[in-house]
Image (cartoon, rainbow, N blue to C red; front, side, top):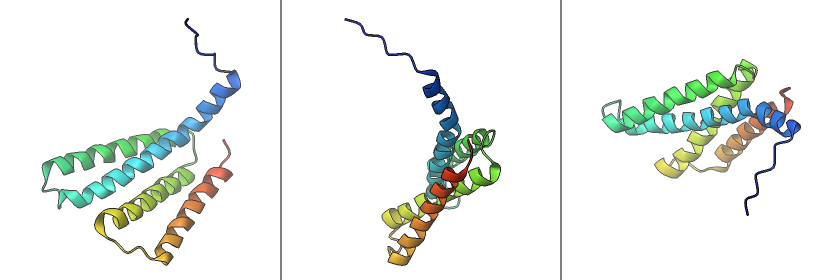
Length: 125
């Protein structure tokens, strides 16, 4: 027997719409991680596929960032975008490129994450 999905309550759809700029910003930040790590694999833009990947993810990152700042304050969005990128690249640097995994580095990464959460929590929406 067919059971249609329940209709979204108007307040639920408003909540989703209010989160959309943050979702776009998260995607932009994750794409920033992808292109920043991709730079390592381009070997100075001499390798075709890593270069294309890097340019594609770079364009996608900027596009999602541009969409998010239609609604979010540009200072907040930029800080969160670069924070996601910094945290992601630092973690992947440790995982993929044997970069140091010291407690001070991990603490600093945690502070960036706290800053991102603080900006999200204090941005009116």
